[in-house]
Image 1 (spheres, rainbow, N blue to C red):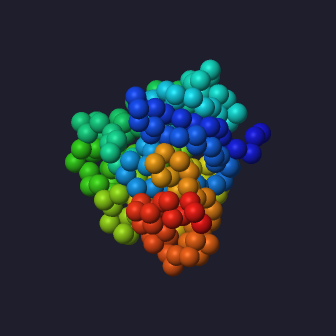
Image 2 (image 1 turned 180 degrees about the horizontal axis):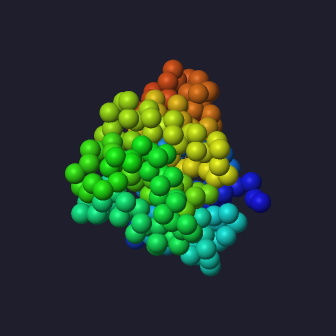
Image 3 (image 1 turned 60 degrees about the vertical axis):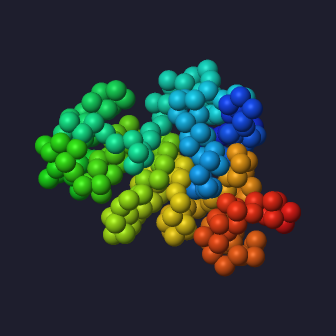
Length: 248
């Protein structure tokens, strides 16, 4: 079994004269949470959409579990799942109905048992027959994460998973994802603008600026390596003065 669950090599995405992702290469290893960071427009969501097969790269290579998504997209995406606050589940379906529909789409075996396990794991039993549209943002986030775990993905993509959540719920979600990642055989690619969260949850971070990876390292030591006190200070410098860091 390959150590890397995700390998990206020389990835580029062009929109006419605009280069949204510029020769990006990185990997996500098993039992690792990697933070993909950067200001708005840096190329994070474009990169995630290419990994999901929503966008086609202009050039470069994406492999999930050693499978090239250009030639084995269906097989690769069977091993992948995704959650984001801007991609809520259908609000007119109940929690149980949503999990069943997506479970059928992924061909999950013993689906009823799997749903019951996830309802318990994400503290959703009392909401099973409630429509998702009437749940709180924290409850909806837990349902989205349960959906994302249905097929036991080896690659989990989380785009701002705790945005708009209260601090207690966000902490609970972070702990749950860390626990699941440590116990399983997959890895996580996590985007966030919350640097406290990134430092708490991520093993490694990549800073994107203008479509390029500018910095990479341990979120707890990387700021000091570049003369900054905190990860937030470093993020602000990446957003405002990336050329200063390139000179470093």
